[in-house]
Length: 488
Image 1 (cartoon, helix red, strand yellow):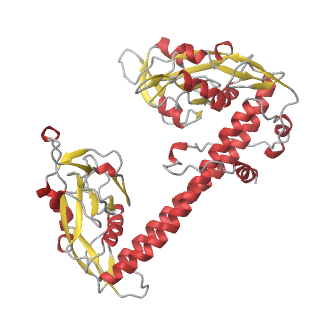
Image 2 (tube, rainbow, N blue to C red):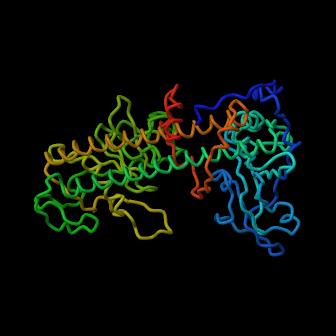
Image 3 (cartoon, rainbow, N blue to C red):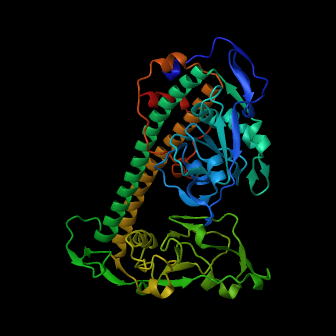
């Protein structure tokens, strides 16, 4: 269906460089000519002399392209005049008018359900289409198109935080077909959007299942070993359960040297012995950041205590307690801050640090380091960590388990990355298709007439939860192949 779409029969110059040519029978108008704009003054504060309201805020718009009454909103108060002016109506479009990034501004959401107490919050602009010229659901799609959103990007002003002026919002250009054709375009895009969302949700579920499978395999391997017929014994440790009876269960201090890093005192830094150092946030699961690190003074006589050697295991003392990674070594001297534990085996003949890494994954996710006080910030002190008891198989068995898990984890991670790339491609394809259709590069009138009736699916699509650093496909990714998958 998508591959059969053709251009319109005739085009004209839009007069707007980033729109290019548009279908000959379309108009091109500024937003001020087709919609009213209202910028909300209602904030999150509660006043005794005002009426209770539910506030549709920045995050509600940023994370959802449809606003519905059943969503969870912040409770606040507003004056009678504010409620009257900023109460949401079906067909309104809200956009974010402030952002920390110039190219992440003007994000739209369509109001599909309203209520008497549901009002537009601060940091948002409310756009109310003139119903004889513009439909709200078409305005949503137009604002999602790159040709229109680009106008917001170049109008954004600021240095560390960017904003759109009232004049900038009102002055953007919109490609404008007739009302019946707006409905046709929306019907087609909504159909394709549903297909893409279904595919993405299926892939998101697959990613979760892959992660669950990976954690289950790691847990089984480091608590039971690789022999399914091994005889077991009670470990005496709640999160461990039973372990092979030939494994030792001992306190960490008997097998590993534990050391917290150096406490940072910025006032005492003289630059005489500057060493780059790692912080808590630099240590993620199986990955250590070494870019843009701060420095502290660590004298040569302190190197043994406060610097790293290849094979050292770094464990987070706070935040996500127990998160860890192995230092792979570097010719440069690196230190570590007091928010990190350094674990170093007493004997490399007895212990394999990467086995300990996998053990800490299981311990952390089994709640072994939880202190039982959810209201306080969790910390894993050196004394607590040294006293924790862990299972230790013989070194040859530790190495066999590590070899097995490294292979399994690499395979699952590869499948997860590939699935995330597919999601990214679907989102890229969705963006490109919206742009091509809203700007009239493709004629969907005949295709939309053949579509079946479908009910909207309420499950939201949160792009922010889908992608992670490094998932983007390489240049020239095959979006045509994605089109085939969507139609299938």
